[in-house]
Length: 208
Image 1 (cartoon, rainbow, N blue to C red):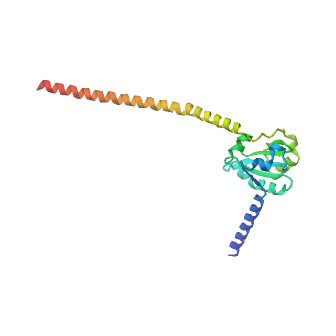
Image 2 (cartoon, rainbow, N blue to C red):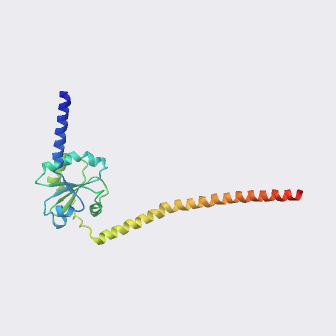
Image 3 (cartoon, one colour):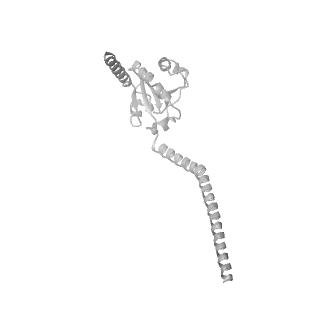
């Protein structure tokens, strides 16, 4: 009984510990992204290290605890955040996120891509405090405007049409061909059967 109680206490402690850690990671979405980060106005809210992730990504899940620890250790110095791009397509399209996790560091109006496969706490801290200087700096993309969204929508529509034409149309053509061939064979069999029946009737009449 004592061991059982001790196990429950340890479980609750670690649950509370992880909860406290996770609270330091800022949750971003399409609605609050620009308002909180101020990327287009030069990072007026400070530096941001953001994890662009997908919930099903195993690598994203594996680094969750480390990311939470990083947020706690850098609290008040650097904003550590995350955004689920499967639910926030506008931000995904803005930054052209294709792989998961994508880790981007924003400082003084510049963007730095973390490409190191080392996803340890020390590696992350070292990057945002020092080694980001060795990475190529680029300008953060501007928020998508209505024309960008419309253009993106049209591109996706035409891509879908193209995919339908490439994959569905040949399948449809095969289906039509098979149906036509099957129908033709069935018609020939039916015609032959009718002719045989008609011939048999004529022979019977002649005998009469």
